[in-house]
Every structure is written in C-alpha cells, then in structure tokens.
Amino acid sequence: MKTNFPVKAFAKLETPFYYYDVELLKKTLDTVRNEAAKHTGFHVHYAVKANFNPRLLDIIAATGLGADCVSGGEVAAALKAGVPASKIVFAGVGKTDKEIASSLDAGIFCFNVESVPEIEAINSLAAERGVVAQVAIRVNPNIGAHTHANITTGLAENKFGINYEQLDDVIDTIESKSNVKLTGLHFHIGSQILVMDDFIALCGRVNELQTMLNEKRGIVLPHINVGGGLGIRYDAPDKFNIPDFELYFATYAKHLKLYPGQQVHFELGRSIVAQCGSLITRATYIKKGTCKQFIIVDAGMNDLVRPALYSAYHRIENLSSCRADEVYDVVGPVCESSDVFCKDRKIPATLRGDIMAIRSAGAYGEAMAFGYNCRPIPQSILSSDIE
Ligand SMILES: *Cc1c(COP(=O)(O)O)cnc(C)c1O
Image (cartoon, rainbow, N blue to C red; front, side, top):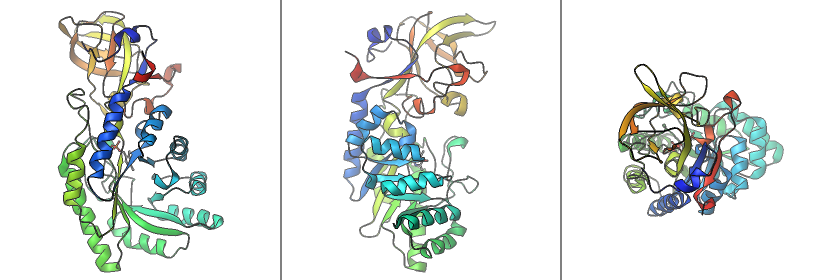
C-alpha cells in the first residue's frame, strides 16, 4: 500500500483520472535546469507531445524551458503556455502549409526539416512573408537505440530524417534558396533509452558529420540538436523518481566535440513528465476464470494505450489494500483482447471498489488517450487541486 497518494481524497472522486504530483514535476524541472546549466551552451526544449495538458505546460513553460513541437497544434499550445516563439522548434515529416505558415507568423526559432519538398514549401511560404526561416536538417544517423522497435527513429529504414548520402544535395538545396537559412543539425534516435552507450554512439556520429561538413564545405553551424529519448525506470517509480540528468548531460559534455560558440539543444519529453503522473482507476469486478483471475478496472486502453501498443510495463499498485499478494491479470473494459495492463502480476488481494494506481503514466498517457467505445477522455487532477 502506498501512503504518498491522497487516497482519502481519491475515494470521493469519479475514476479513471490522471493524477499529477506537481511537487515532483517541479523538482524534476529544477534538476533538469540545474544539470543543463552546468554546461555552457546547453538548452532544453520540452517535447510537448509527451504530455500537452495545458496546466502542466504552464508549469513547464514557467521554468524557462523551450518547446519541441511536432504539429501546428503543439506550437499553438506552447505559445499559449507562454513559451517564447524564440524557444520553439518544429519537427515532423509532414508539416502542412497551414502549420508552416502559422509557425512563420509566430516567428518560431527553427524548423527541423526532413525532406527537400518540405524545404521548398518553407522557402516559398517564407518568401511570401518576406522573412527568412531558420532550418536545421534532421539527420538520420542510422543508429538503432536499444529500445522497443516501434520507438526507434534513427535507422535508415525509418521515415524520419535525411540519410547521409543525401545530405550534400539537401545542403545545396538550402543554400540555393533565399528564404531559408541552415542554422543547425538535428538528431533524435528514439525513446526510453536507458543505456548511455546509445547517446555516446550518437555523439560519435555528430562528431564525424561536423568534421566532414567543416572539411568539405567549410561549414560550422550555430546549433546541434541531439533530440531527446532519455528513459525512465518504469520498474521503480519511487526509487528512481527523477532520472539521472546529471549523467545524461555529462555524457554529452564529454563525448560531443563542439566548435567554439556552438549551442547544444536537447528535446526531453518522457524523462520530464513520466514519473509525476499516475492513472487512478477502480476495480470494477474481480473475475475468476478457469486458470486465471482478472481485476477488471474502469480504465482502459483508450485511457492509457502504452501496454496495448508497445507491450509497455507499468507498475500497478492497489492503494486500498495491504492484504497478501495474489496473481492477477489487470484488464480494462474495452472490447479488445489487447486491453490488458498486465498479466500474471502479484498484487495485494483486491476487492471490488479498491482504488488502484497505474504508475509512471505522465508521458504518452493522457496525451495518447482516445474515445474508442464512446469512452470519455480521462480527466486530470493535480496534487495542488487536493487539500
Ligand atoms: C518524441 C520526440 C522527442 C521526445 O522524446 P522522449 O523520448 O519523450 O524524450 C524529442 N524529439 C523529437 C523530434 C521527437 O519526435
């Protein structure tokens, strides 16, 4: 049983809902900011797609982080939360004219470009407005991060980024146009990465590429964006409630070879918001099958899709019970066999009505919720709402 949740207050609330520990979020943000500040030229952009809950975005924006966006909607959300346009970057393979136009009008810092036709579209929309858009090339470094296949993004076979062989042509294209200016290189190799070796491998690629660009074309770009991807400990959300940002930034500081004055940008999503969030749900029924027993909860895959989508592990705690453990599958009510949060898990003996917490759900949880089966999108409650 967990004591650090306001279980008495939860008992009065309708479930399911996302619960966010604001104090932990703020501590995490302070750690990120302080650890990044130990290294000159390091800047952190929060990856909005991990969680775009407006109240969390307000807190994140207030700490001075920039924003990494992957849609026009995210750019608008970041601006609304008070992130200055000069700290907003916009990535994604499919930026539409409308999204590019509104971002140009807002005056965002940089477009991370992923193809030649996209560069052409940005150039003509910028020309119409008489402005010069700053662009960074998203390079595909062909590195397979040690993580789930659906969340690696840096392999040649992925849709993301521009491959090495095409880089020269892409730079030529940018240089031939008067309304785009190349100001950086961008990389992002995947998500939920816990071994620093993957980031060290990325540094190696960045260094190679910088040397090549410098020697072949005399180019030194003002900023290098190494993306995000730092993972969190889903297995131990209390012990490792704040990721090791010190090691993460120190790894880059040690392995990246920078030219004088170069800035390094990071785009962290999951590592900032995952541990502060839990999906709170109630046991609707305990069902005994022939060889299994199920806890059927009132949250489903539509509220938190990661287990169904990536076979992701989340700790599940019964906040109402300190009874002896039994073995259960925890499942939702949605009419899909994949609506399963965990299988054969030891959980204290659970009764109908018990309140449960699905932990480490602050990233890619609420943000990915959907309305299948006419189920409402879950509400969110901040710890600061309760008392
Ligand atoms: C998703 C994404 C991120 C954030 O990834 P995390 O694993 O949540 O840190 C950063 N940059 C880009 C381009 C992304 O698409």
